[in-house]
Amino acid sequence: MIGTEDLNRVLRRLKLSGVLQTLEVRQQQAVEDNLDASEFLFRVLQDELDRRDGKKLQERLARAGFENERTLEVFNWAFNPKVPKSRIVELSTARFVDQAENILFIGPAGVGKSHLAQALGHRAVRRGHETVFVTAPRMFAELRAGRGDGTYERRLARYCDVALLIIDDLGLMPLRGDEPADLYEIIRLRYEKRSMIITSNRSAAEWPGVFGDPLLASAAVDRLRHHAHIIEIDGPSFRDPKARAAAS
Image (tube, rainbow, N blue to C red; front, side, top):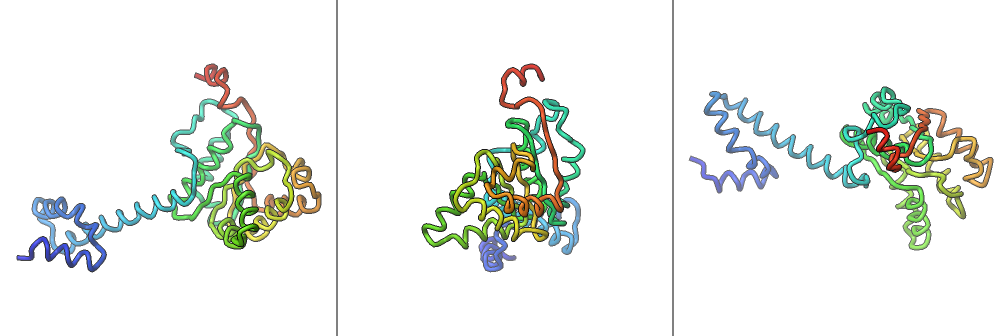
């Protein structure tokens, strides 16, 4: 009879030591259900695949850099009826990522733009898409630092190469220095190749003022809007205690 140590040694060499987590349960099922060898082996190996898929999912979520638990499951739909739930649910299939489409969430502070953007990002990650979430100020700060330490190209590639890039709070303040050119370059390189989600309290008509360069703004907005789902949200702020009390 093969001993436990012999089995452990073989599983480690095959990089299948995770099988041991459910092996005892599967052995018991095999006896109780009178499973043949192929069915037993299938269940054991399926457990290992599920374990690896779960580990990869957690790694993608960690790389995405989401803030806390911002998912559709915990979103308060009842707070603001103006949030287009049916459109959000449709976008949660993540087909927009497969089709290299963009999503623009436009509206005042506190209406749920960031939460919804990250929630759609969570769904994209669950479907295997590499995703990065970043606030606009942090993104520009990192690119600025890259120019100083010689890592600009690597940092820029991080924002250009992922399947889905989520830029939060774009337009809170006018872009300065190299920031308009950086944003345009990211939009240009991703155009019709990879998806973006952008949240902003600025309408498209206000973007020239944010860029400080009407021509650059026009070129950027034209690319963003070409294959975009534009979702404008109005209403009370989720952060307003009085509004929350009135909705409860």
